[in-house]
Length: 499
Picture 1 (cartoon, rainbow, N blue to C red):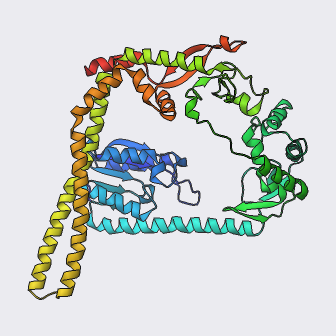
Picture 2: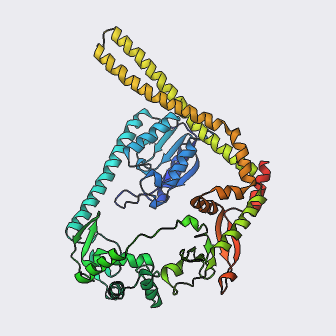
Picture 3: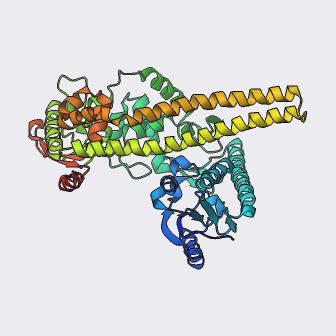
């Protein structure tokens, strides 16, 4: 291997697919640290990806953070080190994209197990081939898994998972008699007694009956039972249903009657957006500590209510109603006072300016690359004319190639105009200063301009939770304490440093 660099980031992860080679996190780190020591490389940081993050880049926060930092000039990173190439990606297009980005930034990728160092010309081809092999391997495993699940489905067998009413024994569904009685009870209450979801859930909780995961019954849990075709001998795979090999818990007659009732009783209510109850989830029940949510919005007086009570009944918790109008006025008053005490003008200006600056750099880099591409296209046209003059190519070839280049030029020039406009907008930051100062000094006006959804999002950004005083009556349940997402004293210290 050719190794000249001194500073590097390391990236390690294990695959979520057990069929793939899974060298442990510890083993990967040990191998990377040993390599760095032997090659005089300073390991600046090791990024460790959680196993549940999956193959997609969008789900892998560590790799996104690492590559963001790799391309920051002040970090002065020469290379990225992995134990094996497929730890980066098993998608050949992703691998090629990463390779090109690193190459343009004059940085390298080292894969220890694959003996790859992209600074070595011979390693570049190996890297690309391994990327393709890794993708093929991943696709083959997915294909085999899919085939296996499809075969299981076609045979009428269950593809796995926990289902209330059954146990999975040797990959076969076997009726759990105790749970099956509960399933029959739910269907009977809904179809014969005409109970609703909440009444059924509350009744089950009062009897001390728990779900498969040992939770309280809720509206959603009851609805799931009533809609699950598995109780009527069907198995499901990729949206398709097929008669299964297991025994039914519900008779065909009861199943059909239930489905008709579900259809008849289902209607779409006018949904009140959660944003119109902006403190939903932030208010905490004084009894159980769980989230408080929108109460019955059809009543004249509106309240927040304990979410556990609303979904699972009085066995789970008490209603603990809190008056909506009072809670929102009190919280808003305290929040506005809190924000005013922070003197946010300076930090807000700094954040906005820093964001604009960080957004400008990649746009400028993109513009440079675009200029380079346009110059290359210009040179390519000149070369084509010389080839035609020397009669190396004919007029038809010249015409076709010129059209191709002109199309590319046209697209890239349009993109250049767009990038230039973005740079102009982001450079005109002085126009934003009066707006920033107004927001910082008059948050109440700013808040009132927001729609319901944005009000809720704004409060969630500021507040971790709102504690409520216990009381027998709603008027006794007052706001006890607002816990903010950031410390007021620390914020003031930071603010003073910025001034």
